[in-house]
Image (tube, rainbow, N blue to C red):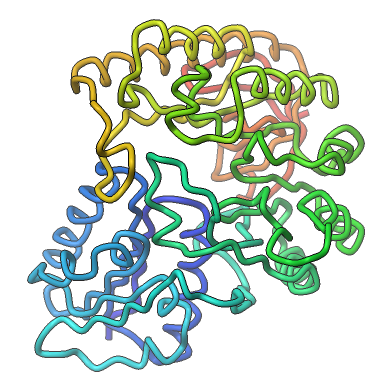
Length: 416
């Protein structure tokens, strides 16, 4: 009898939820099944989801094929019409044990509720991560903001926070299982706590979590909104060595008109101020950013403003997204620019980011790094840079490495 297989597309939150589904599927006795946990952040993500569905069916012709995640939540009929699919589960349903007590139907069965009416996050305790050495932990769900390019709030629902007590229990269990690094994730983690009447925010939660789990070695945060980082968080960045010195910001652009049309809550000056404050708090910091290339109405001058910001702020870890129309968003109605221009601008931004990354790497030669081994001969340092290591260390090991050189994708060194 075949095992349950889960194919995870998209974000770290999906990775966490896939582990929840793995446990739920096991408890429900689900086997000879494939779950595809989809993403819908871009048109390309949906294309990849459809490809994954077709590929999974060809590979597993007799298996029960379940499609879930953001793409399925937003367009259940579209995915239900695919002949390969047996079940469609919404983002709420995929975390419910009863949804996995399945019998293969004659026609696609859909269980997708109105995510905008979702209540509190139902907490789940995961016991591990299949094939991973760092653990992702969900701290909140949903988003209350309405950026004009983004469809994800309608796939994830409103902002809902997980209690700090549950988070302490979850991280404690993962550390006891041997995980040395945890990544806090969600849809909009800087909104943590804002769904309550208290003034308890992200920085407060992290402070309490680190105090309660002293054996946690390394903590990372997923993407941060530069408009909503609180003072307590900046204090932690400056003073807490277990909070790793790499932060990723949801900038999207660095031109004021583009940011206004995106309905972002920060300006270009705000972006500069936040990054400069981060560098003052932690001088050795590396900073990454999400950037959209070719947003509707973006002129050459607007694009150059973003490009120049990458260079002057020395952004080393870029996630560049060529703009793609998302049906149902305000940006879809704005005058677009040509695909060729979008593609060219994305390439220029990526090249600028790669140049800054290589400059950073060259400065690390002859330094000492603490590397979390992902697989024999390979791991990541504190600044989330890939390091080739001359060892066959067990994945999950933390080792001190003398950096001796630079590769195309990071650093190389020898264990001390």
